[in-house]
Image 1 (tube, one colour):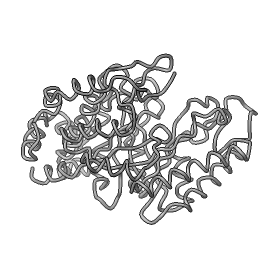
Image 2: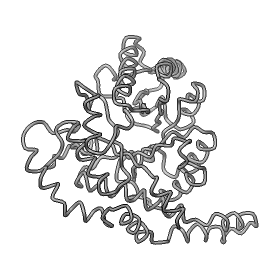
Image 3: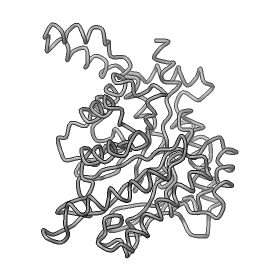
Image 4: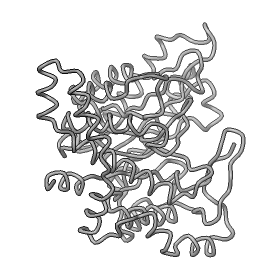
Length: 385
């Protein structure tokens, strides 16, 4: 149990700045009270999640949603709040010029604009001390014959190579993939294999990020995790839940057993070892639930799945597997999953000087009432629909 607690103490889960702003469906954005009006207030809310969970010390930024005049000052502000700047997320999907693609667009001028934005994000990494750039491209085509599929891969490779060469010592980029949307006929980075192939060609500073909501129904995500870990190419996660498509719901909400299976492969493959550099990030939109409690609950869900994964008796599992004992092996796995780890985590938090129940502690803190009263006026953070 001591080893399990040590592993849980070392766990870090990064929260996304955009989860604290207003969001909604593709048809309507729902405004809430107390929503941040600028990146500084987003960091303040993220600091609350870390204060009550103890394992969310960094915050991912999204450019230009989190654009400021002085990024070094933003990083200083984060430090004063007890958190740090995590991954820098680029945005080449919300400009009219990108209707036919960004780095794979037929126009060299549009490709130049998109690549320059990615390079700007590396500059922001330098200013904030971030070591990770996260790349997601909505690029693709909707109709057969609309563009040359192979040529688009060449354009993608050219842009990625330029960005890769710009990375400094200790920096990397994570390439994200998505099955579909908004490109419905052929998405330029639709799956982990495409992302993996580009990253292998580029070198060790390029890795794959697995968004748990970006797969076809029935996809064995833990297989992808195991494979990428084995190849040293798993850079990180964007944790969320899906029911139908890219729903961006709280992680563990739709299929907590899947989250457990994923975390077991992380444990099995050494993904918690510092040298692997696997980043555990959330990517969620809290549309109808309160923002900060939604993030706290998600962090707790990942923590619970991790604790269960660490409880798997790997010696007993290996013995059953080697003997071909199908039911015995499955029983070992299920015994860990069915264990109630909440008392263990409450005990761990108490040992760390935290409240045993982060949700209850936050609710009693009065922070929501405070920001609801203070953040009146100005433009709330969020995205339009």
